[in-house]
Length: 399
Image (cartoon, rainbow, N blue to C red; front, side, top):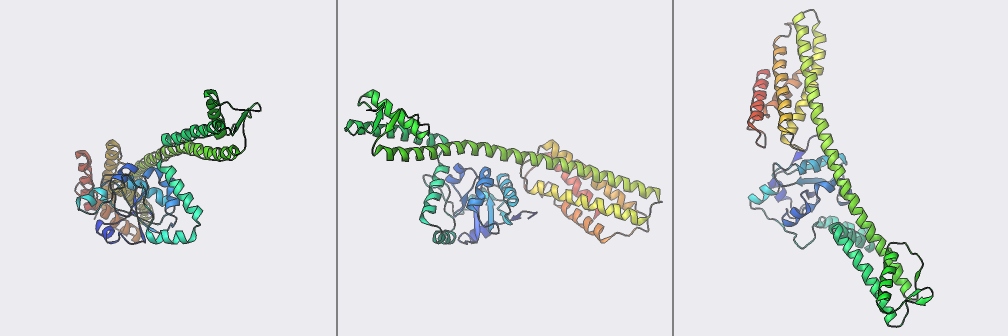
């Protein structure tokens, strides 16, 4: 999907219980827990690339994405990632939670509850029928691990190590002799407790030096402790890897955005150069009109494409560009429009506009008409607003 569709607050309110529409909140987990639209799925923007395939298995399902409000870029970033992942029906609720709250619409808080709500009822029912119980337990366990912080997971791991060591030692106090060292049962005193905790540590870390060995029922406990310890420790490592992956995703988005801005400036410069070159051919008067038409059609199509990109940049920004870069882009666009107007007025009398050129000029006028300080959804600096108004004036001359 090349252009992101929008969805209104009224439509979302009307379809709150419609299982064919999945509402996705891409704000951080803390903001989602504080307040979100009823039935919305909590999927922070930084986690979309990783968790979307699990939470949203149907790539053709209709998805409504929202964040904080009209100036929040998170929904655009998330929507772009979803489109790259193959989701074909992504729509953007531009007003976000801010408009929803101001309109007095109902909100749901998840403080003390699950941060991520269940999928729509119908989807859950279908999934429950098809999935074995152990899969549902596995999903619940994975959700729990995702919600816990790295420090909490490490605390659970450490508590399990100490508790298991105490159990081994307590078995020795009762005379069972569950641990042996050098062929003799571990002592019952403080030294024995330290030895039991030491054995618990090496068991959960899968080191197993062999100097302390479990006996009898302690072997079963050691097996469960080793498996659980490795799983928890793996979850801690995954948390660190996931954090690094989120940073890399944000870096990729930032780099892609900067490349996009550089490409727009380069292509606008090329379009301006083409317009000036075509104008010089017209002044010469010795070039056939069909050759001028072919070159003008090509330049106009490229120019329309870049105008669409600038239009999307102003109306649906993935990130807010620096004012200096945006001013340079708008200035280049205004200059190109004025040059295009001058070119159209100096075409030879026998020049006949093609259907391609006519459609391109109509599209240019339509896009430029929406690039004005009063039209764009957010307020820009006065110098940027001035360039936007100049662009609209130049486009009206072309129209």
